Image (cartoon, rainbow, N blue to C red; front, side, top):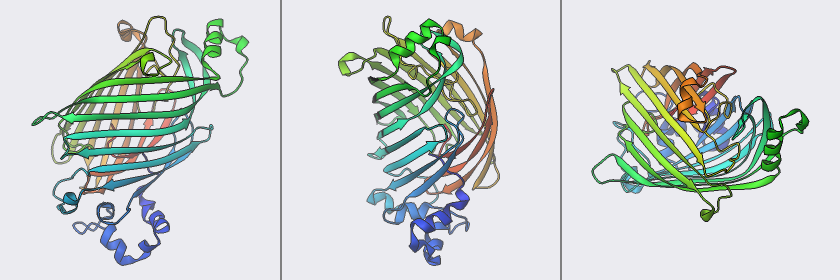
Length: 394
């Protein structure tokens, strides 16, 4: 989710909810009585059907400039509604998400999602149902490698993702399972002269395009989470590992396995400074001589680096961010990251190093939940980009 600029929200909401034009309503539900600043905590927690509209300007290099509009609905239990203390950010029992987007290169999509923190955060659920039609440029293909130039593909179809995790009693450890289902039809966005491409590339595109391919997988998840708040962590650690198997027995047209190991580290250096470190490893393993669709191998995921630009069966990423708190509401940050992609782990040492860097700011827009919004400006090897952020960046 993202936001063009939170400073326009009062005007936008006044159009969506005419009753908000009432000054008493606005002052009661949109102004924090403690500091007199703009804050949506009361509106989200007390007003029936209250939601946070999230308009966004998209500048992702992979899909070009575009617009998106989303909505966040916070649902609290009766017990939580009685807790009006602002001394510590709390997790709502449920969060629902609606969104849609479109960009200048013809990419479009819509999604509905849900986050659940149930049984006093002993059970966590994430689920997303989406239908999308992105146009993406691929610079390498499975079993072929670097193409020397890009091939633009349209990938249209539904996506279902969900996971359910249970907290081991008295610990910060979660175990659970996950599901990922995609049914994607790949098409060449334009009709390039395939005769100019190597024969292996032509054969790959002929096999992979203009037909629907289903990838259906089930997996296991193991997590450790000691963050003080997942929406805007100030301190704590989040380590996650997951393994998924995509098999014909569960409806997958392509058989392979995937796994990811990631670690998010947050240190509160003092009352003003915070340091964050992200480490991540992604990998896929095709079964036998199976040829994977081009969207299956992982890519280097860094702000400032175009999605799908650097792919491989093995990908590593490291990113560090330093934040300075100007006030309880405002935070400035700088960040830098690096990543490598290769076909095998023993090739990562000699793989091209991809670096990015940038700066950004955050505003605490819902103190009750610790929810922040803001903007990041990032630069990578080929592109510069602006990212509108809602909640934790990682």
